Image 1 (tube, rainbow, N blue to C red):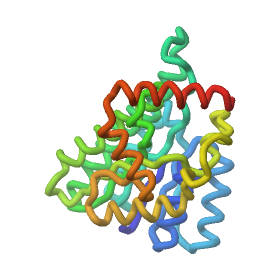
Image 2 (image 1 turned 30 degrees about the vertical axis):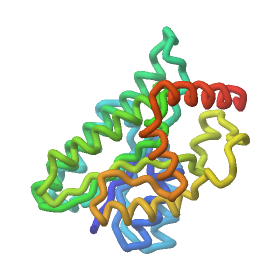
Image 3 (image 1 turned 90 degrees about the horizontal axis):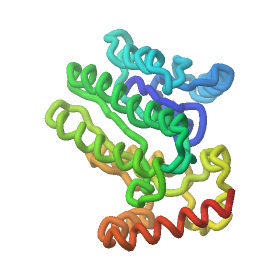
Image 4 (image 1 turned 90 degrees about the vertical axis):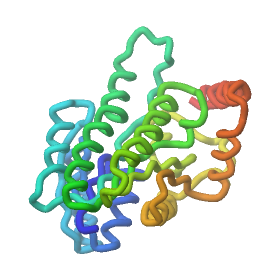
Amino acid sequence: MHRALITGGTAGIGAAFARAFAGRGTALVLVARDADRLDEVAAQLRRQYGVEVETLVADLSDRDAQQRVADRLETSADPVDVLVNNAGFSVKSPLLDEDLSQHDRGFEVMIRAVLKLGGAAGRGMRERGRGWIINVGSVSALVTQNNYSAIKAWVGNYSESLGVQLAGTGVQVTALMPGWVRTEFHSRAGIKGSSIPGPLWLDADRLVEDCLRDVARGRPVSIPSKRWKLIAAVLRTTPRGLVARLSALLSHRRNREK
């Protein structure tokens, strides 16, 4: 793969994907909304890995920005071979809130933008007969805590559906479903994570390497680490009533940590 476009590519899992591809000599297109941080990360990657790094400043809650990134994915000049739909954030507003602004932003960034960019990448890659699309979901899709878990459930189903529609074209679609990852995601959301057992935390760079192996093997879903594979398998086979009780317990613990 010659060029990878990564949304939210300046921090956390997105930055780990950027390092992983740069280490393989893959040119990058990094998408983020903070122009200064974007320039800083791009410069670091160029110095450390000697790869070409293109930057796109885009707030994916804005539809014009979504379109600019989609146009880049469909261009035939310097085509993108890999799309990593990673941009996201914790939707903290309760489902009963009258103010839907945070939910609307979550829908734009983690649903509409994923749909828009996945479609654009899929069309371009299908025409060229190859490509990878990686959509970052979450194991939280298997529980029923909040709108974030609902959004990530959509991401998982969408990814598998897109994979079905692109079957036989040479384009591989994989949903990455990580557990808890040591990044700034939780601190930004105001979650301390102190009650989460140490062995459940994942390293972002290791997680990305596991994901890339799964993508190369043609797997539609990647759940890095044996422990999280086991947790996901248990959640998938647990009666939904018990999952709801577990979700309530997790939500209560999360609220205590804020």
